[in-house]
Length: 319
Image (tube, rainbow, N blue to C red; front, side, top):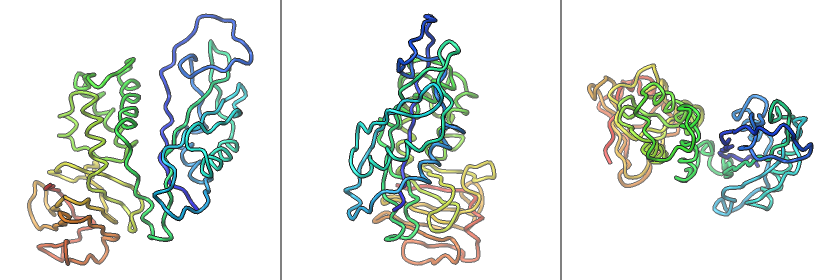
């Protein structure tokens, strides 16, 4: 059974130590070293490695699948991994995660004062079953991340891009519009959401950004491929234009409109032209393919000749 999960490997800001005498076998914490250990290719490659190698026993009740599972391990001076422990979520999935972590290729080791040292890393993952056999291809939809983890991701990226220490929710991201845009782009990729240019300009503080990202996870979900596959974008606010710069997907393969939302798509910018309306006010609407769209029930259009897979130019939301 394949497993789909979200990984957040939190890296803490590193501070140097001035004492040149480094005990040979001491295990340091991430905050105590100059450079952190790194998986070959970075976090994206680590996520890919885990996704390819994780196999968990079948779970009959998806609601019984483990929630956040946390592992700790030591990256040694030669890059090898040891002392793997599952500190949360022990059981059949924890055992499988421990096995796969033990099969990781060597990391680039941490250094302190230019010398490789041992460091203990913490890795939280959020597993849930890929239910593609029971419900074909729906497993690509990513589970909602809780607000605390969203904030942690925002805090880390804000400290990195703004070169600050101990960023709090009140930190003003508006003071540097270029860094604010870079921060938004990094978080868009991390959380698979899409912010309009107006949204980005309206964000003033780091806490506001975290709140926006958390809400966006509950928004409209667009997929670049049929069957809820491919690139994912989540939207929660209106888009006057959906252009090639990424305000929306260039090609829509599938879509999920959450309950309580009515979405109107236009084939011209600024909410003009022909319309396609998806009314999910009473229940969630899933469109597995934008090829040969069926305009019935909650899905309606003013023109069946428009190629809605490619010609969405603006979007309006009603909640």
